[in-house]
Length: 190
Image (tube, rainbow, N blue to C red; front, side):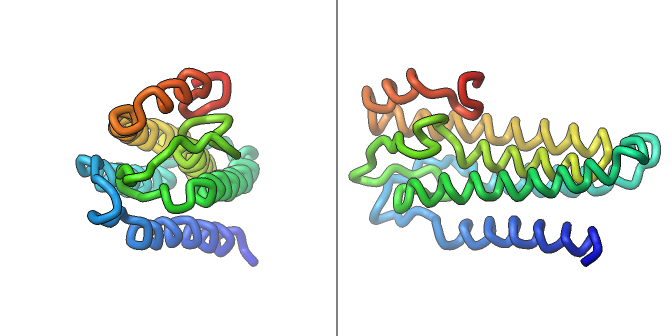
């Protein structure tokens, strides 16, 4: 199988799973109170625009990584996409029914602090950021890499503010205590 086919299969599985989640894991108005403020659509817009721009810059010769580095960047990037994808799915399966693509609080919502959630508060977003980093690296272009780091990071930071505000409002001291003992995205760092 040639490298471009591998790339397409990985990206189709990754993006395809996100489309499935978008429609299958939306909150139900009877089961949860929505607090999303449209942030799910901000995420999709930013991610789509960044991927388009990064793909466009990929072919700009002046911003490409050195030729010797490109094959390593490509395969490392693909590996990062897969690692991020697995992290995100693991986080989603840990939350089970509490996971929704839009910010929502279930009536019986509680703090989940097991598995990856015992290490960071938002492992699903950590996984997404690792995948976007991987996409930027796979493009083997410095500008593409910057776009795939900065755009998604800003969009996810916006989303985290909305999500944490909703969780603090609904769960109070239990979420506050959880937040005090865990970092948002990177264990022990941030």
